[in-house]
Length: 114
Length: 112
Image (cartoon, rainbow over all chains, first blue to last red; front, side, top):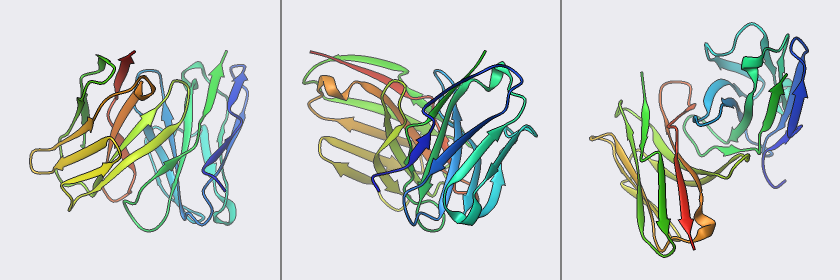
């Protein structure tokens, strides 16, 4: 295991379609985070899991977004009825332990909604 | 609400120069601070993590300092190389969630 893995790397979808992204964290990392990054901006927090429990969701995570982490391993982020404003880089990160420990990021999934 | 600011937004230097990137945050009640590097279209690579009780952290040609009381951190890069060209992001851990709050980054270009 060499790091956080995200799939797909790129996704182009038509407006109104549903998309799902996958994140495989570093083995044994109990915390998993999702961030969104638009051009020229820093990543913005969306949600995080401690093991299988989703502990926090940002106000950025509208009703069209849902995230899961079954069995505390990989995670999926689904966006329903995509809008052009959803176009962004979606980043996943994982960390080990409680609280503010070092976070390791994946390569991201670039979503383009046309 | 915690806000993180990075200055300058962009920086161009000749190869071999030493340089400093700045990061400031509005709420000094942070748990720690992390510096990242991001290449175009890529994810983030962790460079250094400074615990709130530490004043600085070093890794190779990189040295990061933290002054919680003034709400500032600096990333010092010694003897810059063209391969250092990237966007450098500063992020603080704050609040109960343990999530990172990022600045917008400094885009560094090192000219050969």
